[in-house]
Image (cartoon, rainbow, N blue to C red; front, side, top):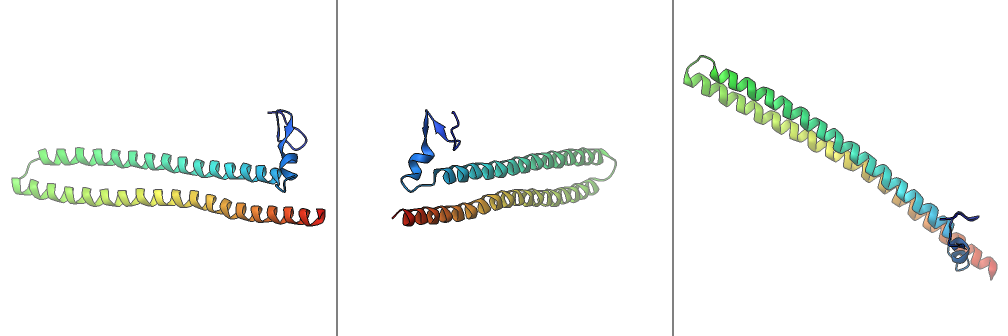
Length: 148
């Protein structure tokens, strides 16, 4: 796409001039769209970073679980009465369950935090975009009043 004076020249036609004649601020619209895409890109980047952190944390939790299960298997093979082994196993299962629930809570908090950050970026952009639309309409209205 060639760039004319306004930067929005397509096939030799400057659309900003055509739309501005109809009371539409094309340059402002294009700038708003650029900002919208930038905000979406930032939100997407935060989301991807959040997913990576979550995957890393899940891998860490899985490694810990495997170590604990290995330890449990060794303890179950050790000497002791059946009652002692069952009691140890019940205690280990309880601890494993509690740790799994704590880990799930940590993951949920990470997901929530990532979603909140991305939502804040998009929310701020929506608010700014609405303000820009209002300003653009007022600008066009003033131009129309001057022309009349």
